[in-house]
Image (cartoon, rainbow, N blue to C red; front, side):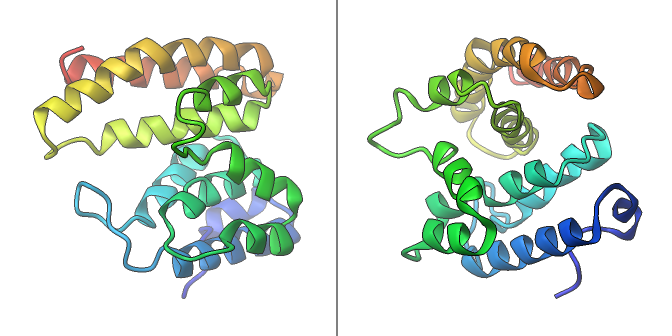
Length: 193
């Protein structure tokens, strides 16, 4: 398997971070092998696109955020047991905690988003917004009712999350919430909301 990070990104990370991100991708690729999304694409393509949004569009060069994006749905989408324990052992308890925060279950479905927002953790909030951006960008070809539901939910919940992110994101990334807000608003319009 070729390295996950492209050579153009190497200047933004320490060698140890590059190794960790590449290993994280290799693990996620293995765990999600063969899993498909509703739109018919391989599930592993979703975190790949998310990291591309992080690095290429938003210019947020933060290794911890890259790991969060790679692992964000691994536990939820995997059919394997002990995935979060493996992530904790190999990548640290902090990553295991982040993965847990971003994993929606039947038990936390009603409090899931508010827990992310109330965490005050800019990386978790940004990860969820990048996740939603990619989800909205890949709605083409899905049922119209599902597209409208996603657009409505995005307008009602995620646009305000951008305002929360503005308050907690480091100053060097202060334009990021505005960029995401603008993109999500355009996508909501596109899908009739």
